[in-house]
Length: 496
Ligand code: UN1
Image (cartoon, rainbow, N blue to C red; front, side, top):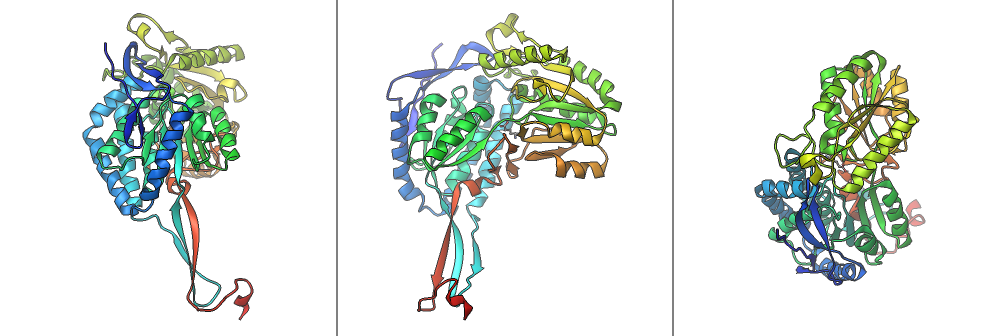
């Protein structure tokens, strides 16, 4: 079957990688289905993209922010019109089920309208000067040319979290999409282009992390890098970015806990755990990968959870009756298998799943059974390390305080959830859980675009997307206007 060949977008032109090399984008539900062929870019392509972004910056930064925002509004409307097609493209390249890829496109639509509003805010502050007849204010300026490195699990939403705020703030961008899922970035950027985005303001350079990603990181004219991916790669990105004084925003791993207290609405907690653990085939940085169960409900919850996990329908995400799609590629299957081995060797008890699915229609893709481990203790690797697959572990505890301590005992701090009807404990957990996000009576997944998104400890380096993105994509300038017509020396003449 013939497939389409895609090019990089540089300075408004669609051009192949200079090397002529390409990477195939395969459907994880059917590896014989080639979604498209994308450039394998390297330093010379990145160089051209940065030059184009730099040139475009000279004019884009001067476009009034409310006008920049109008392009986002139009792009949001186009995404609404194209939602179904873009969701289908995304399921085909990434695997998650249609309901979820529709949600992913919806998240980009939400982001467009949310961030477009920022075009009429971008507030600065004024403050009294310490001197007479002097006016003091601070204004937000764009950072310049920014590099965006995005993951495969939210192939349109996460690029939108980075592109839209960067654009409204007046930056120009080079985006390097994940090698597994470039098409959704192309679709997103196509909507921007069709909405009237001028050439060079957004450039796409497809390729691997070691090829295109590294070159972006090393380029001296790139002033900021926003990265979402693993903590291992993120640490490297942060260190290399520091070498050329780039601002670096890192959003990385999680080992998110859902705590269920004895007084919880058990059905609700079960629904939440199932969705949190196996939605997106467990491939969210917010995925529930530890379920902490208080002793009183543990046995009942475990039995019911295992039953429901086993009943989930795994298959091609384009089939509307499927609940759990494939994992994105064979490497992820290997990681899931590796952690099943690790957990078994540590003495955890396999209660459901545990294997790759390879028979019949499954043989064409990269499928893994929804997997549940019981008898897990907080010290085990399966309770501490991110799997990024449909593998969840159950940990039992006696007291609420113990649950908080277990939840906090890991190196990550992205999302957490507590199921209880006790308002005092809910508020205590909201204060004491070490995480960027805490849910009460809702699962660990499902963040909304207009709240701060990000985490503590090895999940991040202090920045936030959503509410925090404008902060990252702007830099403050302090402006003083002296209208006294005489020299006034700060800290010296203010004693008068
Ligand atoms: C991610 O997994 O990197 O909160 C992002 C959620 C989604 C975003 C997840 N809205 O689960």
